[in-house]
Amino acid sequence: MTRRSAKITIVALGLAVMSAVGVSCARSERAATQPSACEPGAAPVVDSVLLAFLSKARAAHHKADLAEASGDVARAIASLESLTGGARPGGATPLPEASEVLSDTYARLADLRSARGEFDTALRDVDAGLALARETTYFRGHLFEVRGLVEERRAKSLPEGADRESARKAAMDAFDEAVRIQDQVISSALDDGGAR
Amino acid sequence: MKREHKLRLVHPDERVAFEDEPPPSPEELAEAEALRASLEKGEHPLAVVLRSASAPASLDDALNDALIERALGKSEAHVEGEDAPPTASERAGAARLRDALDAPRGEERRAPLAELAEALVAAHEPRAIEPLRNEALIARALGRTSAQPRKGRVLSVVTAAVVMAAAAAAGFALTLRPSTESTVAEAPELQRSRSAGELFDTPFPRVGGASARVDRIAGARATELRQNRFALWGVR
Figure 1: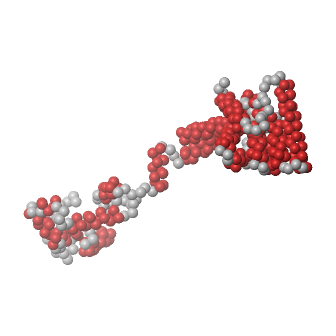
Figure 2 (figure 1 turned 180 degrees about the vertical axis):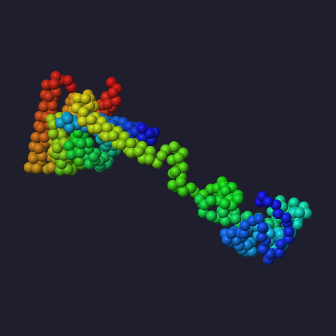
Figure 3 (figure 1 turned 120 degrees about the vertical axis):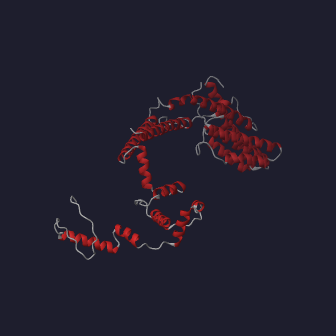
């Protein structure tokens, strides 16, 4: 083997090792970010993308806190809408934590809008939140509680009559559903040995 | 000539005959006639010398002056100087040298000092070397023949191709290893995305507290992300 071919061989071996390590590292990174084909149904691991979304959510909510404290409800709503209208980890089917944070954000939006008399928009926020929080959790129960709050505020805003009574009844139904869900969550926790 | 002869004056038209020698053959007469014609035309070197001796031509004035000054020792200062007039022979030599330097490269240098002049020109302002000649010089310096590098290049390409193929196979082998042996096997030890409900012991208040809940979720998952990274790095 000539010196030239020896050099080329060394370079080729170096490239081979680098490519093999790269493939291996890429495989590890994929395994760390999402389940492989060998693990159907496995949940993705906690990664930096999820943390980035949660960090954005913290910033949006604390910014809304400051806006509310200064009486600027519109700014608070805009801050929360930047979260609900932005990218979500998992896309159309967000990760569980992202879904719960988004549903809680819709609940807060509904509270803020109903306080301004925007009852229909507030109820749409509640529906959007319920579409994300489908499991029996405190988050889903909280959304029904907020729906009852919205309907209660609507009833108070209406004069005595059929509409007011209808809103009042809707509020009662929502509170009942909230209580039922929370009871299920509490029962589930107790079945687990009351570890929580 | 073995026998001695007495010298005497001979008239040009007189034919000389030697008693003890045979008459000239036709070939000898023809050769003598050719020599005579050559002498009369001045083509024979001996004719040039004899003619210069018997009827010398006039010298060039400049050459004549230079020769006189040189003979009288008056031209020593000028000989060394740049203003000394060149002699005819010097001009002729310079012309031959100029013609030799103007001749294409590769031709034989017949003029004296032509090779030295060419070497001086090359040292002062070298010309670009032809690519083929340059390649030949490099190949000769490296001590290889024209056939050897081609063979080595083929071997290098084949070797590199084999090694790259082996690398690709190794990469696929790493990718397709069973999950029990790969890094995926460590995935169950990693913290996975899941509901954050376990972080809360009681139902949420009807109004407020959303920021605190997000803070708790983000804080818990940040801790788990660090744990995942440590696990991937092999830190326990």
